Image (cartoon, rainbow, N blue to C red; front, side):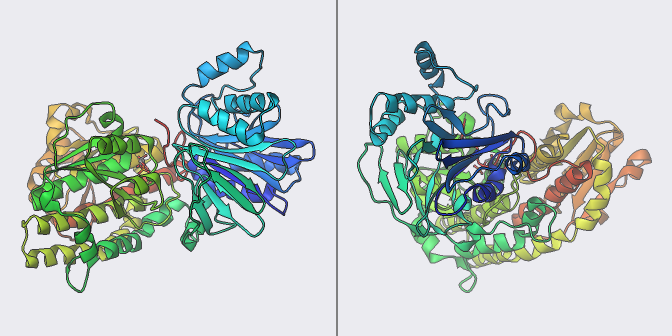
Length: 612
Ligand code: F6R
């Protein structure tokens, strides 16, 4: 969602706020703004659209000062206009906010009844009005801030400046993450460690309900009850500060190419290559023989990773699995059985729906686990078990390396479960571990399909609709392929189970609709090949991704002329989803590049969806 930065420091702050906002732009890019503390109080500069628009505004109207706040917005309440851009200001108060204030309408009505006038349609502005009123009523800054936080329902991460308080920056978190950064005679607030990455690697992660009063060289942290608390300072890895594209055109392209390493890093955390088994510490952390069912909860791409893993958990470990999108699960009153392990899968570890579903499972007394890429995230901290992925920071809004890292972790856990449940022998465990460890090499080989894919995506970029088909675990991969294509190229795409085609979707097939068929050489290949014939018989344009081009059915007429085959590397079906992820990501990527869309920051989207 939105990105936040706050700096209370020694040097001119505006360029540094901009530097941080550029790194945060992936979190939202509908509008951006900064406020800098001056002798006359905080002065704002805001712009609709991307950070570059804000840069132009600041170049025309520079603002000097050493303390300031900045924000990049993903709009929830109110259109992405300058008036709705953060920071919002009222009276003595200027602030930025990430999250949603659920009771803002009621609060706003009360403030309007007192004659206060609002300049935006946002929920955020009420916080500035409330804090200013509390200060006007004579409350000290600390008490005023506390009294306002108690009135807010919903989610927030806040950074606040107050006129006349030039050595003070206020922060608070509930439902949306916020970190304190510790510098040399400088302090920072950020919506994540990346935000403060250019300035410091020493951070404190605030807990739910915490709020803080920062001065240049100190931080007074209080918990939800208002009591002073000590939160540890941790040193984040340098990678949190490294978010460069290098020689790649887009972060997405870079992240697709990083997958051999990111999967390898993730496997290293789960698998012991010498013992050819799941690592002892992973086995010690869980006993799958005591688990009767898995409930996987996730959103979007992470949901597809969970859906793919389900096939392997059931087939290899004999463990029943339910997978559900968290936004439905959390409102459905699901009937859970004892012995169920709830697993939240999430890149950010902050997705509001997934977090709420995880908390609901905890409240039911279920054991919980989190497969997350941000190891300091709320889910990572709240779940009983943390199963990290090691993709490194993912900046492209469309998830790629985080997805394959999720698959890497989940497939490793399948082997763990199968071994602990007595479903596989030692030798079979060694075989599966070996197969997983070979997959980074095959992912690297799959990247070699790039040139072929560039060629065929020009035509794909002209399509209005695209259909993706797959069977078995290639079915959720087909769904993921369709999601990737629509989110970055804006081409309408749908994924279907190949066997389901004849039950309705086949009506969509015509000579204008490309059909991407994901068909590794497995037990289901022949069945998928028959579906290809059905598509071809109706004039469909087939793009087949397979490691056995020789087995692709012979088509006739126009279908034969339009058929395109992408040769994938040979691989064990157990890791096919990992290997075939690469061509579907590249198909989406190059199609989007041909179309000229904003690949890393596609319209209407944001990374880390911390609102419902
Ligand atoms: C799609 C994508 C989203 C996320 C979803 C969940 O490319 O990135 O569908 O997968 O918003 O986000 P996380 O994994 O952070 O919970």
